[in-house]
Length: 499
Ligand code: ADP
Image (cartoon, rainbow, N blue to C red; front, side, top):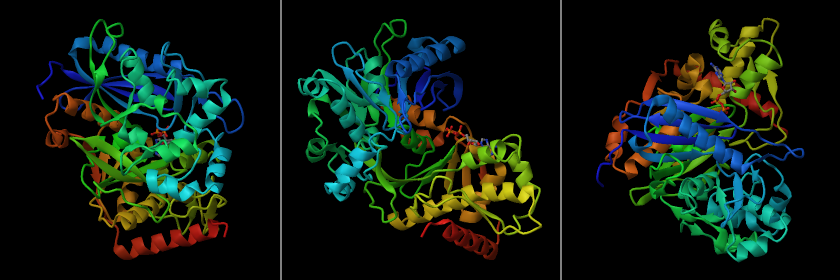
């Protein structure tokens, strides 16, 4: 493809609490960023909603702001890429572009009963085989079913082709292109419980099980490719190609350059999100991990295994806000480093149960191994170490499911700033941990997908040559110590389990 005139790629990172817009130059450097927060509503316990127009308006104004602040003309933008909060569900009118209901956010639990009903109708195994997902309220299909069941006349209108469904990427693409493109990418489609990840088509049986009219579904496109051009009314007449789209976690995997099977990244935020590239084959998990599409690029798709740790950076917040052991999250690094070990103290952060590979929703948090000599620093250190142990648990499950060796772990997210945590992670995994140089890995992934589509970067080699890695942490712990510590962790986890 011919090289586009354009000096920058504009990445839109549409997250759960804010919309960010990041400008990247040809070296893959973030040269400007603007961010707009927007509200979440909690109309009932367990329900989470957002206003789709607020999502769009915050994203558009962040985009305009970064261009203004950097003095960048819209015609200098070679392409736009989108990375988005996943699974959040929007339904809008095809003619007026008006949403018919608030967006149901991924965290919203209102469809738990719907999912239980699908399970008792025998759908769990079939849904898993087709979509790679567990039948859980997180995913979009049941959320869409809920809207069609609860908004007057919605299903009939959807059948007549008057209503459109989309995850947040599709909603942004629709608005960016002035309603000309109704499309999503395959990574986002793979989070709906409606998309067959093997055949890569919307699945008629699942659509029927959730009573969802096919006419309202977006076209599923590769993650890298031109979806359409921006409405000239939005950016001073410029018609910028929208050319890269992926769910936020898949986008971070791409942004970390994890293009080869066995390469994995961990985003250390409130929780941890781990994804491992498994190549052209979807790998079924025997440990309750999700199988998901990583992306479609260059005419082929790649798959990933995904697992998460519910409480990661959140344990640091807990030390700070509930126990008052530290004043800032960053202080945890120096405090943990002030002692050579935890003196046998372990924290199991099962505050909200334990996910993969333990899967015990009734497990509860635990501080174990306390003796009279235990001090604040030991508890703080145990909390940080718990993030690294939980990560190892998920990675071991991935290694077994995929049958692949892991060359290193790529790290990003807010808590990856903690050097103690990164070094302990390398030690406990016995693997190098490579921390991304910039905070903007999620946005960078979307920019890379878009830049690839328009020839801003010629190929994956050019993407790998971008200077993305910051510090590398090499394992330095003797094997016997690693084995002892991890055995102690396993024992602490056994105590925390409710069985
Ligand atoms: P999210 O995207 O989930 O909101 P971020 O990637 O912004 O999360 O990371 C914020 C989380 O990281 C918080 O839970 C915070 O406690 C934790 N965190 C931030 N800085 C540090 C640090 N230096 N050491 C340990 N944890 C940290």
